[in-house]
Amino acid sequence: MTPVHLAGPRLALREIEHEDTDALLAIYGDPKATRHLSFEPRTREQVQAIVDRSMNSAKDSPRNEYGLAVTHLGEHRLIGYARLATEPQQAATIGFALHQAEWGKGLGIETVHLLCGLGFNTLGLHRIWAARSPLNEASARTLLRAGMTEDGCIRDHVFVHGAWRDSITYSILEHEWARVDGLHAVGSVTSDVAESAQPSGIRPGDEAPRER
Ligand SMILES: CC(C)(COP(=O)(O)OP(=O)(O)OC[C@H]1O[C@@H](n2cnc3c(N)ncnc32)[C@H](O)[C@@H]1OP(=O)(O)O)[C@@H](O)C(=O)NCCC(=O)NCCS
Image 1: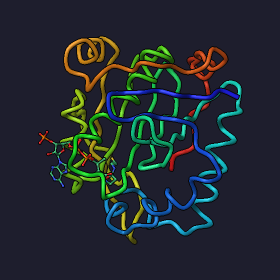
Image 2: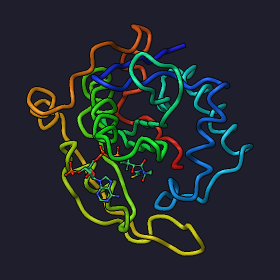
Image 3: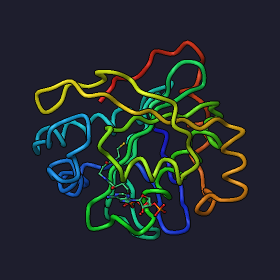
């Protein structure tokens, strides 16, 4: 096991548990929360499979995927899902979604900062990137405000809602994160991944994780 527990000023990231299924379904089954994501609203069975996969990936060695619960600091209830999947060349892609009751409070930015803390501070990555739908203005603002830079467009990146859709991509490099972390991050990550999780998943040449 490689238990992750990261804390920011208002949020924490922890490992997913079986008991998180209903709370995750409230996000991934919600047409509004998934409107700009790369998949249709999930069924309970599909969310259960994501929970199972997230729990199983925590046991992998090396670990390539971190599918984590976002919680309010000091609470256990899942209010969001945050994912970091490592790739070759000390890179990773991130994804995140919060329950719509939590939108508009700055928690999206803090979630991205926690993922960057995991990727750069704990796992020693060089580059973290994210992709959003061209129509996802909330994600665009969140990624930019978190310190990422718009890189460009992947044409016909995902097939969703019956059509191919482009993605706009963003990235942040380790030296850029060092500046954000030192100056602007919404708090720094205060606790850390257990010793056994140290950069087990990060080896140039590792297989890229599955796309979701
Ligand atoms: C994207 C998401 C995580 C943002 O979370 P949030 O907690 O509402 O965002 P924050 O409060 O941290 O705000 C971050 C920035 O986005 C802006 N923003 C938030 N919602 C917005 C919206 N609907 N339209 C335009 N800008 C928006 C905020 O104003 C803020 O920018 P500012 O500081 O310059 O004003 C949330 O909307 C969500 O979970 N959406 C569904 C899943 C999703 O789209 N995930 C992203 C996949 S790439």
